[in-house]
Image (cartoon, one colour):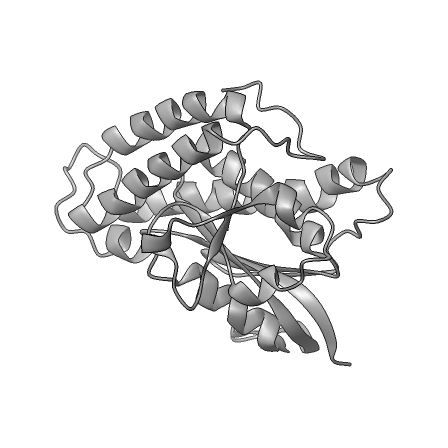
Length: 249
């Protein structure tokens, strides 16, 4: 059955570069080990959020249905929900957890048609494993395009079609318009995931995470763009409904 939904696509950045790295010191963790640790944190954060936290957070908010479809891959995931807030709230918590557990995460939110056809896992005696997850639709495509936008940063970018749904609850509370120089056909707004009182401490943590890594110039642009976005979050006085304070900062 085809329906109209909102979609979040999140992706752990830098996996290919780390796996293909050839300049690791003998006494340092290999690129493979670093990726395995980061992806382990990502999948644990995603699972705990969907299974444990969201049911409690949204228990008294019937206007925000929980996400009803999650597709998890090695370094990325799709989350599907009926309302904008159904995917925006998970995105905010995932971005916060990514900073806390130090892995570079980026996302995009889209809207449109969606259909889930089949899913499952098959295995035979020869240890061959065949996994299937067939889903498609404009929501999937627009979320992917927003995440792949040319706008840099460890941020969650919003597809322009989402912003046309201006009657959606919490759309204005959770989003900020991108500077004109960063707007393009795939993203015109971004998700705000720090309160103004949290933004400075979050930026300090992000700088520390950035500085402990040996980053390429391209990767550095993503951290610097995120820090600039945090400065804009600091200048925004609006609250973040249904988001608990980040007391760990």
